[in-house]
Image (tube, rainbow, N blue to C red):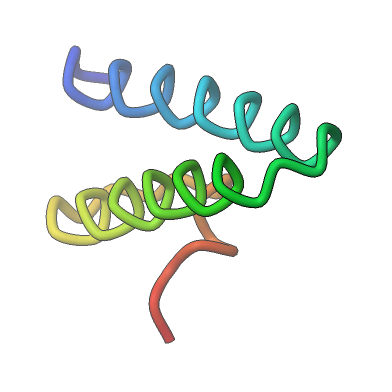
Length: 61
C-alpha cells in the first residue's frame, strides 16, 4: 500500500468520524461540509482506481 492510499484512508476515516459527530449534534451545516468532503474523496479514489469501501455511500450515481 502506498503512502497516498494510506493518507486517503486516514483522511476518510477522520471525515467519517467528523460526520458522525455532526449527525449526533444535529448540525446540518457540518453534515453538509463533511458529506461534501467524503464525496470529493470518493471522486479522488475513483479517479485513481482505488477501492475504499467506506466511500461507497458517497459515490456519484
